[in-house]
Image 1 (cartoon, rainbow, N blue to C red):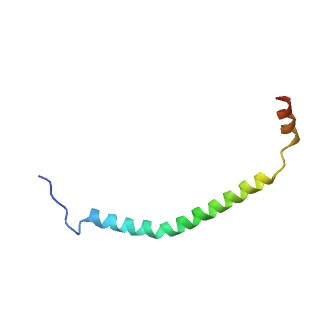
Image 2 (image 1 turned 90 degrees about the horizontal axis):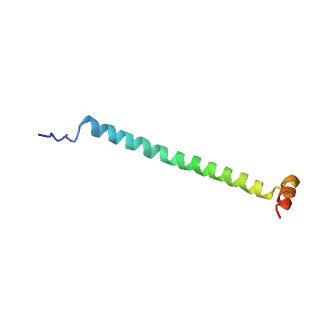
Image 3 (image 1 turned 90 degrees about the vertical axis):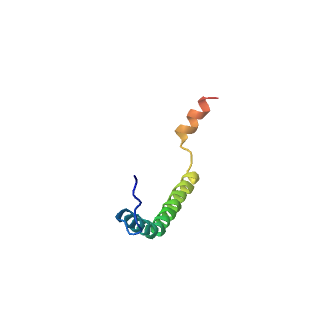
Length: 64
């Protein structure tokens, strides 16, 4: 026969405290994720503004 755990069981309390901790970290995680996203976007934008190296352009020209 299975025994139901009561409201104050250790496993339930542990789950509650883990839940609270993860909620506290969510805000800072989202903030860090936003910062990383902004940094990646900045690097990507600067890469798009770079000139194509002449060696690469020459290689592409040979493929025609």
